[in-house]
Image 1 (cartoon, one colour):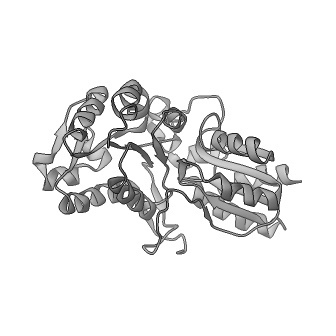
Image 2: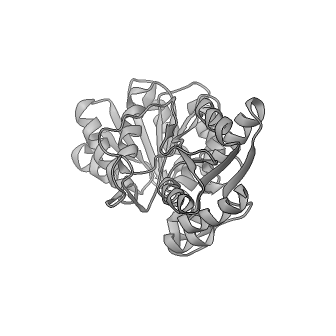
Image 3: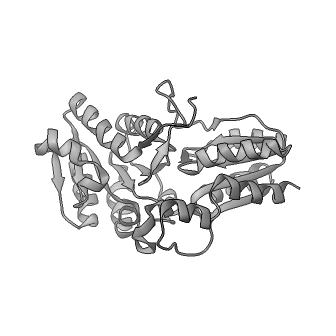
Length: 313
């Protein structure tokens, strides 16, 4: 693991990874819904214009176009903002992609409150819940640029639909290039005996900083990174819960139906444990800078520590 000093754009890393994958496999194609600059698929477009298709602001068409291309051996990557990819095109993803288990990759950018000033209409706080309920869908939430690259590289090799949620904000490096993505495994980032913190996406770095604060208060937190929400590695979480007997989930998403929901489902069936879910509540977001919103919704390291200290004691 590296020290969290360098900030990188996961979106830019996604764009660069697409170019590398396009050079290696001519079947990789990209479907864009008029947001290639924001999603960084413009990098692929610049090098492979014949394999980049802009359907305009028509997300349903983007998904069905990708489904069709997959039937002739192409590996389509569809990209737009998470709120549009998951919500506006949900039926097309369900019926045209997941039901026949077509080989389509949806990389949705601008997920969660860190979209910032674009406000509630552009902040996907329900996309993980929407995607993980669909059979055959794999759902991944990377925590930094390196994990994003590894997740996208996994997706191109995997046969079936994949949803990857990528942040708008630049993220601190948590992993280095030696990191190996395993779709079946959550990652224990720190050892602890007092509380298990399960997290992914932007909140991994904050949770790791939170663990340092907790340690200074005499609380040893075991931080588990669960980049794959579906299929969730519940076994690793159960083993941690058996040690700490208290679990906290942290996510840049509603506490309803996302990572917290998935952990609750898994533990309640296998090892019922006291749980605190931290994320946005049953509410919409609002406009503000990414930093302001992370603080307002209690997702910064200091705010997390306050809540977890109250939960543990």
